[in-house]
Image: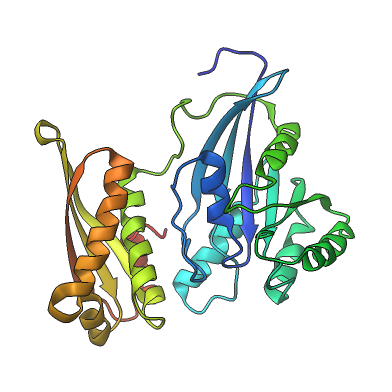
Length: 303
């Protein structure tokens, strides 16, 4: 518990359509990769908390950012779960960041989110991301549109990928912090267990390397996670779930080359995260229509 009486803290939800850059922004803020990133939409499936500590001339503070799944029209129970997670994360927070991709513009998905945010009890800040790859004219048009929304307090233009404008955003967010405790230790960057982050790292590599029709039908479960301190080694066993037998063959690949590729790249990220060597074993199982199975969704942590 922090002993400084002039300490402030608060929770901040990041919400937006798929692939707007929510996870990239949170990773940029906390200075570490805790939320997986992919060019594919709907990469984030669960809410993930990132912790940022700082100080102003007047007070020290702790911001807890909540990265949420991209909001879109759900096509299965997993999709319904993801939308509910995103909207539930709007409750009882100090601020909400609505993030938008100017290279796409304000689409129907964004309009639906804005309708929901108009009823938010928390202050809403609009974030125009990806300024590094969008035209100044597109950014300005969106800024004008968002500035007309009475419930939006301010509009910021940033690039989460290179950090442009992020410090200015953080400075603004200090205004919304309230007197309160240090919820997490100062050296902690996320509340998410290492086991979960490792499962997400495997899924990230699957998203990166597999064909377009497979990734959203892939889930990952960590079967075993054991430290061998005497050898500075972590043994991790994980199962990749897919929905079709044909997908299993693609995930494994010719002579096992694809599953080896996924495992090799995931292991590198895990070793960086854990600070230890990792012995990673991957398996593939077929679970038809698992995204509509409540029991399997619970098993994979979507509950």
